[in-house]
Structures are given as structure tokens and as C-alpha cells.
Length: 248
Image 1 (cartoon, rainbow, N blue to C red):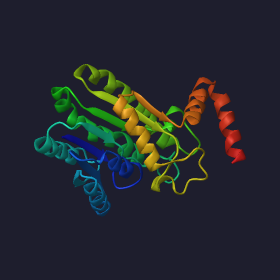
Image 2 (image 1 turned 180 degrees about the horizontal axis):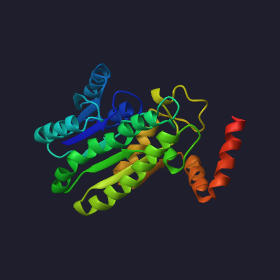
Image 3 (image 1 turned 30 degrees about the horizontal axis):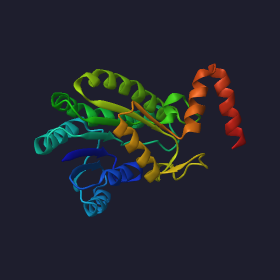
């Protein structure tokens, strides 16, 4: 029997990932702030033969997350998989101090609060997978996305460290860097190139997690584009972004 924990499960990618892992013999711990949405998701999961456990929590609260981890470890032991998915983008992406704090509290500290309380038990068990939901936006600062891009860049560096330090204990750690996904968080975005449904993104993520991939990135064209931008001199990249912004 496997145990899966998914944060930010009340909508979008988290919801789709929960359904993607819903199968007989699996217990799925659903974590989010909207208990009503989790209840609806729990019903859908149960129809697929999984056991769902709802946790109305805020990943920004370290002490409550530590208590939650102890509760789960006592009940089900070390989890087979943790997907740290909870995240926010902010109304404008954020270049002001308050927005930066709000986004970093959720996107960075929230991930740490989700993963770190379980690490000792997972290392002792000598097995388990951890997936951190980042973004291709973590490769480079983008227009009006200062805080969001910074938060995903921080996750990229932190995941590298956790992966390196955990592999010798039998754990696999994956950083997931998707492109544009059609979710509540992106519903007010301007037209998005190569946008994927949450279900398709979840399917690709599960394939990568099952393979133990260090990085799970898609779609290919956007991956190549952002990586190309990081290779250019910074001001060249700035010019390309200005051109693309003025043409949109």
C-alpha cells in the first residue's frame, strides 16, 4: 500500500495529480486551505478505489505542518511520494516588498514546511520520492514576474541540494518545471503559448516521477527557449523579451 501527500490539491495541477495517482491500494493525503474543494476531490478519488484523507492546512504555518507530518507518520508511516505543489503567482507577479514576501512565504517556505518534516523518516525507511513543483520561469526573471520567478529559482537551487543529499539514502527527488498550464491561477493570463491542460501536465509529471527523473520539464519548445535565453548575455535576453512583449 502506498501513501501519497499532495499540497495545493484543491484545484488545478494539484487536483489533477491527485486523480492521476488515485488507484486501489493508495492512500492520498490532500492538503489545502479550501476544505470544501478537498471534500469534492475526496469523493472523486474514492470512486477510483483510493482512500483520501483531507487536511485543511496552510503550508506557510511551519508548526502546524510539523504537527501534520507527525500525524501522518504515526498513522501511515513514511510516505511513498510527496508532491509539494502549493503555490501562488500574485496579482502582478510582484516587484514590491509585500508581494515578494507573500509569494516567497508560500512558494519557498511552504515547500520547505511540506518536505522537511518527512525527510528524516524517509531517509530511515530508505525509500520514497519527492517532487517539487517549480516552473520554467525559474530560469530567468520575466517581465512583471519578479517575486514569482525568484521563488521558482530558489526552489531550483534548493531541490538540487536536497536531491544530492538524499540519493545516498535511497530517495529520488525531482524538480518539475512545467510551462503554461490551464488552471485557476492562469485564468486571467494573456494568451499562453503551448498551454497544456492540467490533466495532461499531471500525466507527464507522473511519467517523470516514476522514472526518477531529476528534472521534469515540458513542453520541449519552451524548455529550449528559456534555456537558450540563459545562455545569452543578459542584455541580449532583455531585448528578446522586450520584442516579444511589444508584439503580444
